[in-house]
Amino acid sequence: MSEALSITASAVDPGLLALPWSTPLAEWTSRDTVSLPKGISRHLVRFANLSGRVVAVKETTEAMARREYDMLGNLARLDVPCVERVAVIAGRWTHSPQASAQRGDGAGEDAAGQPLPAALVTAHLKFSLPYRALFTQVLRPDTAGRLVDALAVLLVRLHNVGFFWGDVSLSNTLFRRDAGAFAAYLVDAETGELHEGGLSRGHREHDLEVAHTNIAGEILDLAAGGRLEGSLDAVEIADGIIASYRSLWAALTDRETFAANESWRITERVQRLNALGFDIGEMSIQTTPDGTRVAIEPKVVDAGHHQRRLLRLTGLDVEENQARRLLNDLDEYRARAGGLADDEEMLAHEWVTRVFEPIVRAIPYELRAKLEPAEVFHQVLEHRWYMSQRSGAAVPLAEVLTSYVDDVLRHRRDEATFMGPATETMTLPIPTVPASDDDDAVDWRDLV
Image (cartoon, rainbow, N blue to C red; front, top):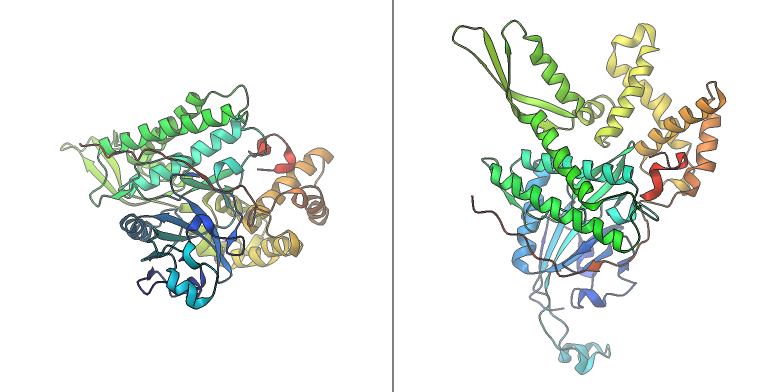
């Protein structure tokens, strides 16, 4: 390994030195890599073991690796869903013939001693999958709609903090199950820009245009491979992200005017945003000179309303829809608590120890890589509802758990360690900055 090797890391991990940086990434062996599903990428990507965890390694230029490393750090500080940065590896060289001869490793004259691309290392997001791994045979309408909706929410969150993506696509996104929906995470920030003063309308529209083009192309690619249900139209699916984005963006940013005696509409606006999963940190309120009209406009809107409430009450850190579902169950538990119902924090602790944790612990150890604990809890509740509907009466939880484990969970693939095809690498144009299913929705056994 060349003495010029340079490692920039967010945390010191000696295991980084053990990876074969003097070997081109395409030549890394199964001893160094892990087989996990990957999306389409313009760069070569491999997964590797690093000190007991899995990381993604992407070869690129040093300048682009460092830029993306810094951008992921900035997005993490802004609490935007994205992969975690680990390190940038620069100064990579293949072994020289002289060094190979000294080591006696047999490389000899085959080792050219040539420079290698830099590498960006990011942490693998557990229980996440690229969109192509979320359906086993063909993409169905419900799954397509939920994927697009999740990407629209992610794009709104990015634009809300002033991030221009520049290359919005399903391939540049990872998805995690979120209580019947999906939560989207940004994977590739290579073309992104962070604007402290916020994004112009031109930047936002450009991201939407790129998203529409890329998604339509990705869906057409599925159709060409026979992986799209016949009734689906690629352009209509792509249109979905535009509609979802505009609806959510309007709910977060539109100015609203009403009569001065309708002040309750301020509370209504806040509650409507809370229901969408957002908190208002600041709001602009203006009245007319004669006091007859009031105008309000949200100024600082933070995502994760239900996540923060659940985390505060229980310490559980889950996705937004999962948090909403768990809070609903907690509220039902609180309603049955009688005299203790006013002590929300005490009830939340009791609910965790008496309801949530027993269900999670009831899952056999060998099946715990199938789904996240919060998603398992959600699916157990769904399964209980299904069994109760079928029998016409409430079904004991022990019976529900046995049925869920044996009939549903045991037959799912392990999404924490799901084995998948090698990365599909292709040459893609880098968008320019503007100048100004899983058959999971069909069968109840999937419960997603």
